Image (cartoon, rainbow, N blue to C red; front, side, top):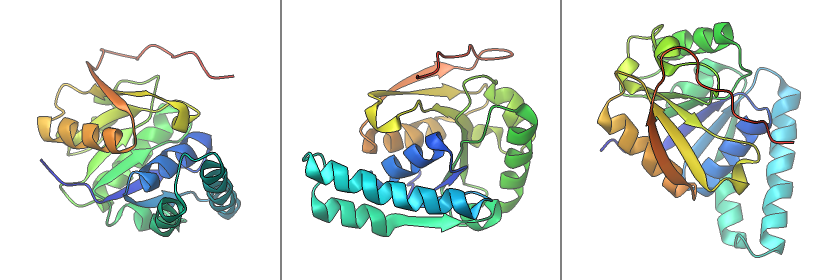
Length: 197
């Protein structure tokens, strides 16, 4: 199985921040990307607050929190974030054109073995991965907000997603403290999941 050491998260909205937080606590070098510097500053501040609260209630030890903060990095471009990543998780708004543009760019800047996941709950991974030369390394990792409260992560395999990618991303989910359910991609759109309040 491919070993994942570094995870890039594209988009520092609520879901992106939650995914990056879980990845850093899971022991991964984590690079959070957003084109807006204010979004990255907000993320950094939120991470510190969340970890302090987790220490206060006994969910995380101080040494774990310090290690997680040390693993978090910030990038203002997709290229900078994804260059050394073993897994890139796209967490941008649900617009097919935006997701396709990001996957096209990631396909160019990532190493050949890098896996690319979308957080979509709307689009088929086959449709998004079609813009890449690595559909076997593409899948959906369906995180829901708030990420730290999720018990199970749904992984959606595309028609060409390889077993190594499924296994490696399932291990990432487990290290984030999530159970894993693997489902097949549907033709066309995936059903919209209810949004958290």
